[in-house]
Image 1 (cartoon, rainbow, N blue to C red):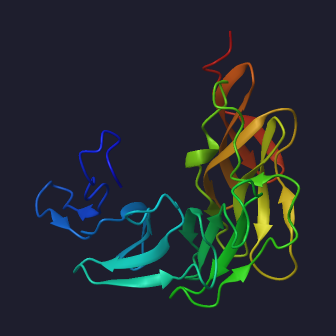
Image 2 (image 1 turned 180 degrees about the vertical axis):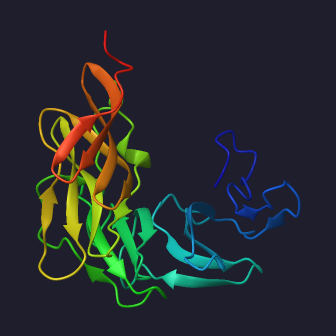
Length: 239
């Protein structure tokens, strides 16, 4: 990556560090010219999965998903040759599998609906779970200069307790709704929120889903979906 004014390459733009909770024992885990983003702890805490992107002398943001151990050892976790590329976010399921949401499927341009993949805990055997999906944008967002803008870009994907599905926002026009996307069996994307609004998932426990809900003229408030019953928790933005 080069500075705009031509002063040379910007080295070590982003790297991973770990530090004890008391602020001691800082250790650097990565040291390379790639941009390191989207770190997620391995289920056993032995290291992190991260995306290594923006190779020097390239503007292609598509990178490789790698693993770095606490001891600094690195290995490739999921090659872009075999599965998703343009990773937006990922999460580990309780059964040890990893769930990826990508934005740029192989052989396509950047204006794509996004895809969901599930892979084994070691990064092998990627399975595309949304091959027929075209109606909307997974982890899509609405225009950024309105009150609801900017949520989905940092939204987590929430995996069901039984590892059967992942909950993620899908944008269609001026609305964003949370969908349950099956990780096994037949392809299935079922909306769990509805109406003229934007909904972004925050956390899930059991049958309870905590999410943000807002509209073009009302900033978001917290809502709770308990089974089929929705309840608004805050009214901070009422006039």
